[in-house]
Length: 95
Image (tube, rainbow, N blue to C red; front, side):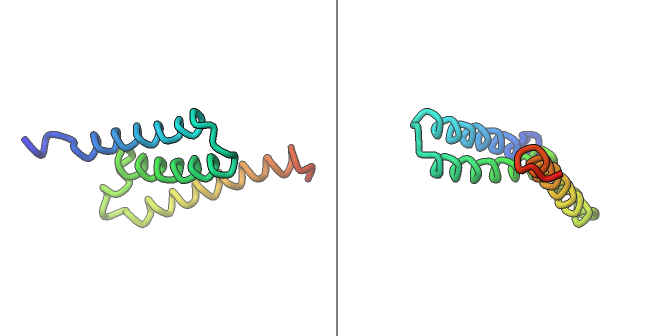
């Protein structure tokens, strides 16, 4: 019966809720911009890790683990290029 209960998923869900409450606390407690941004960025990074490992099963495929992490790195690269490319063209005036 222990194998049938998804304890890792339940704990991941609870941890995600806690991280969401921490992010809400930044808004409710009206923290300074620098403090709030630091807390939100740390919570976002942890939340992304929880989502990738627990809910997207990134670590379950033992034979293809390197390609999974390579795909994540590539997706992160494409996302960053898209965000900063948009900032360059629309805000900073580079064409």
